[in-house]
Figure 1 (tube, rainbow, N blue to C red):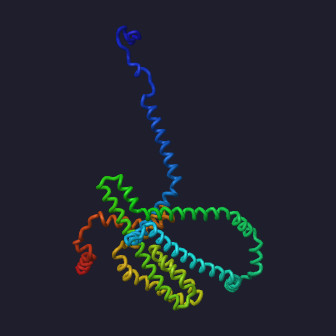
Figure 2: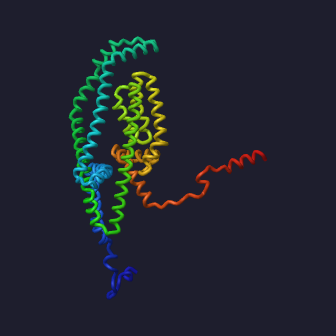
Figure 3: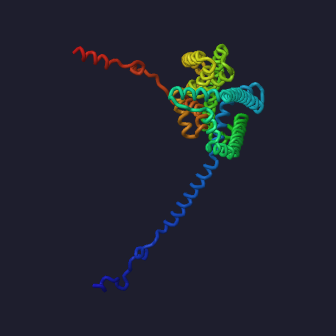
Length: 385
């Protein structure tokens, strides 16, 4: 039996590949390819994380260029060179920014100085109130001695002194990033036509028309939205300045500028954040002044929502407050403070794209325009039955 199982002489035996088990020929090549793809992915991921800061700066610069390009185009159309026009726009923005910082800085310094001078009186009042309310026996002198000779104060001072270098490095890094964004914004705005020609030169004619149309929509909607907000911020600042000046509230120019900018460029909650500071300053002077400020903020907000904003934003993009707030939340989740900064311009641009490319139809069904009352009629009939 054993001899019969062996192949006889002259008969072919089984193939050598099936007789022995070995590694398939394609497996080493597949392993090499998989390792090469993994290495390329790791390299691309490392490179992306290394340049993510530069990409964010380019994104901010792009939207900044879109915002100032209408003004640059307006001056260039009247014979001014684009470089000089961009420089004038930059100068105007810089003057406005420095004025805003100086006014609010003076307000902050004066308030901190006032609080520092009145701090002993505030502490005495708080201690007297605690002793009278809770029948305690706190001593102001002992509290000051315990605070001045406490270990946590000494450790906090040492840590603050050690963090000076880190704070300085952070400030220098922020200044360098600001300079980078300003430089790219200047080049994007000054060389906008050349940049568009360079981009369209590598595309077929049909794609060139689409790219130019999208660019025009982005410039018109982003710049128009920001300019309309700036105009409403100016009107709001003037109105609140008149109120604060009539009431005699100190730092009226700085507070009016704060209210105008924050209420317009921070969606949904910006009005309440902007109105809190002048209300607090007015309350330190006279509580009734604070009541007048709150009432004026509420009334002006209604006037702006129903009268001013529809007229100013009729030719630009009017973003719904819920959409603006959602875009800021999404932008903050994706890119942090930078995402919150560019969220509304990006949403305005996207809404402009949808308005240009999405076809809309008239709604003829009356149920879409008025609430249905049929269930109420059915309920009344049922009660009568």
